[in-house]
Image 1 (tube, helix red, strand yellow):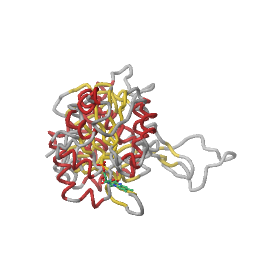
Image 2 (image 1 turned 90 degrees about the vertical axis):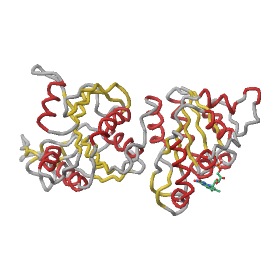
Image 3 (image 1 turned 30 degrees about the horizontal axis):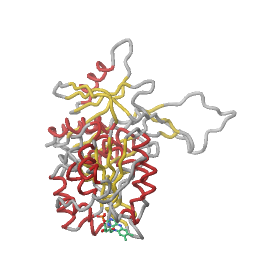
Image 4 (image 1 turned 60 degrees about the vertical axis):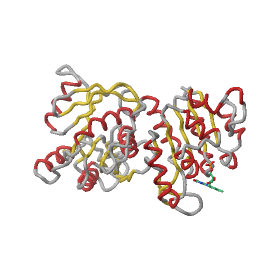
Length: 405
Ligand SMILES: Cc1cc2nc3c(=O)[nH]c(=O)nc-3n(C[C@H](O)[C@H](O)[C@H](O)COP(=O)(O)O)c2cc1C
């Protein structure tokens, strides 16, 4: 695919280098268009070497090729990282005073802005209005991350990490309409990752969940405008998604407490975490030693079912307006296939939607791609085509939208 990476004149311009690299490494043809100010931060040669294509900032270079029109027309995706306050203002006004803004006017493909600026600039009414204008033109303006800004300041306005911009950009290449602003004003709770049930101070019973699907769900929901709380168990060192509140837990018990707490006032809970069904009944205070008193078995106690608890709370009128999404990682056996077990699970659990993944060799766990089925309490069944975990998340959020009260 042909990707234009536009770079504004912000301190985070150096992170655009990693982004360009990710796109070229995944086989895309990348054209970098920095602004003149961007070249104050990163040299033209760096972008030319990383992309393998020439780099210009103005419309008067290479005139016979009419690049200010051609590049935009031919692009499959335009990603602006970092998008400065000034660059977004110019683009929102429809200015075409350099090659990048001219390209933004001629592009008819998805356009993704990844803003980066100080919190004051991000929250200024002028920037807020420019972001709204860009969104009304169909552009996707990412929510920035919160954290350390230039100097000692912290707050919202930090450039989302290149991995995150890459994930969202890849999603837009899979599905151009995957990130509408349809969840503004909604509060979502998403659980992710596997729980760890301690046996002694150094050992635990765990599972193979990486957290990638739940993180993708939280990320896409936040970029669709929702206020998201992510209850995260053990994950494979994933970066917290931008504009998402992350609550870290370890055990199933802790996850249950955190989900119950944050479900109050939420519009939906999406339980993507792999919560342990059982925990060791006895947790040794000291490390279990090899030798005379070697244990030959582990006694297990059943954990409470968090999803069933939410459904019960809704029935009791404690969480009357909550929409509930469950996940089922299933394998088939002689008694039935994956879908048979999943239908029974949906019936038993009483949630609104059930995302079903077939697990086994190289499927669902740890990998970056996923597929499955989406079962609705109303009897609907939708195949979720193979694609990124962000793509699966976007399909689930499409189905969840109409269920929100
Ligand atoms: C050290 C330094 C860091 C800057 N960082 C940012 C930034 O992160 N975001 C931003 O909007 N402007 C930032 N600016 C201001 C922009 O460089 C300035 O507004 C410029 O006109 C933006 O040009 P552009 O439209 O080419 O991006 C910074 C300026 C300096 C000197």
